[in-house]
Length: 276
Image (spheres, rainbow, N blue to C red):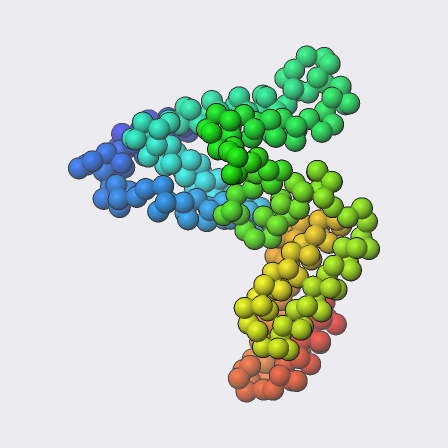
C-alpha cells in the first residue's frame, strides 16, 4: 500500500485536507461529491446518538471513535459551506470560542464578574440577549412574528427533549405551577380525556390526547428534575432485558412466544421481575 499523503494524523488540518480531497471534483469520492447539507444532516444526528450510546455503555474506546465521527460531521458541513462561500471551519471555531468566552464572564471576566451573585442567572440572560441581537440583525423579529420566550428551541429535537426545553423556557417567565399537585392533576385530567376519545373511537382525537398526556408527564419529570429522555431510555432497556429473559426461559423449555399464551408469558415476566 502506498504511503498516505498525510503526515500528521493527529492534526485537525489533516482531517480538513482529507475532506477537501473527498469533495474535489473529478478526483474526489463520487458519493461525497453528491452530498449536501440536507443529505448529511441525518448522519450528523445519528453520530450524536452514537456518542451518547458509547457514554451509556461506558465504553471509552468506542467513545473516542464516535467523537471522531462526530467531528467529521462538523468538518463535512464546514467544507460544503466553504465551497458556497458561506463560512469556513475556522469561522465555526471562532464563533464557538467567542460564544464560550462571552457566556463565561465569571471565568474570563474581571473580579466583579467572578462573584457568585453575578453568576446566578447570567447564562440565560446572555443567551436571550444573543437571540434578540441575532433576530434584530437578520430581521426575523417582525410585527407578525414577535420575539418569544420560546425562541431557540429546534423543531428537529427529539420530542421529549423539545418538550422539556419548551417547558423550561416558559417556566423562566413565570408560566409554571409552583408545586407538584397541579402537575399531577393535569396528568390525571389528560388521562381522562384520552380514555374518553379511545372509548368513542376517534383516532385523530386520541392521538392529540396522547400527545397532551405525554407532554403533561414530561412536565412532571421536569418538576422532579428527572430527564424524561433518560428515564424512557432506561425503561426501554429494562423492557428489552426482561423480554429477552422471557424468551430465554421459553427456549429452555423448548418453546417460543408463538407457542404459549399471553398469560404464560406474563407469568414468566413476573418471575423475571422477582429474580431482578
